[in-house]
Image (cartoon, rainbow, N blue to C red):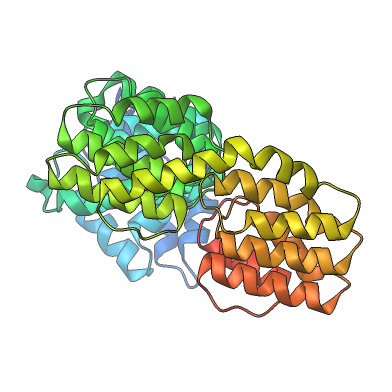
Length: 445
């Protein structure tokens, strides 16, 4: 770990300050003294700064000069070095950050691992989290989690603030490196008591199928709070577009039958957020539950699934469901067939019959979507209007493409549809909508 070539400016061991700790143990005091001299000498020169100091250290063998790290970690106790850095206007942690970027990955990992277990200061701990957020990859997930698990009260940090920094770091890794999802899931399975809460909060801020798959995989671990997982699934589902994984939807339906009120309510809400139309009967049953939390969750989910507000009466929803089921059995196959007819008039008539129905509206939206590419501008316009009335986001990406339609009326209808689906008032420009949806973390497939 230490440099093999002795720097020319090294001072004798008898003049060195006490040896500091480095990854793997104490370092050679001669090398430590050489490193200290290499930092002190340039500090008094004009133009000294972090860049100049990094160049100086690299000139004497960093990386992988381990004493550099040992000295900088402990420099707060070195009055002369601290004063010299201050006079040069160099922040110790800024210098560490620059050196970290110049350090080979395996060496840097050993450095950080050693510091995490050797009681880092408040500044060092927050610096490590910020550094990993900006430069880390999936291999550093365990380091972020280890930092979040440090007992920080004794060094004057608020555990909630540290957790928030750790969540931000994990979200940065998730956004930058897809392998982070698997690494995070594996770390949680090893030590759920230490890491589950932070990991779930980080995943709850993500988007799309990878985040949902990671959360779904943890649902079977009884050591992890299932309600917290379901709330995260609900949050991710609202920012993602269907279709969703059938296994996850089935698992949510299973949990919607649980006796525990909190668990059942969380599962019902998650099913609604993911647009699981096969959960409608379970939602209607939830309206009859004697516990208010379950009834409230079922009512909210039914409104989300259908766009209807029929109130809390199970009888009213049951009657609606029976009527919709009869239409699907008796009329829907024929109407969906007519929707694909080559004659625009036949397809338009089918659209008119489909629009009032709110059961399985995601399926209806997907059936209408191909007509957005029809040769008939009138049919394309009516398809946009029908999708707006259905209120399903299932085919939002296809509607988004119609903002570039050659027909002005189609562009206007597509714009109205998107404004209705996402409840935002943006200009009818495709790039503006894409930017907004990406900033909102909505996953467009």
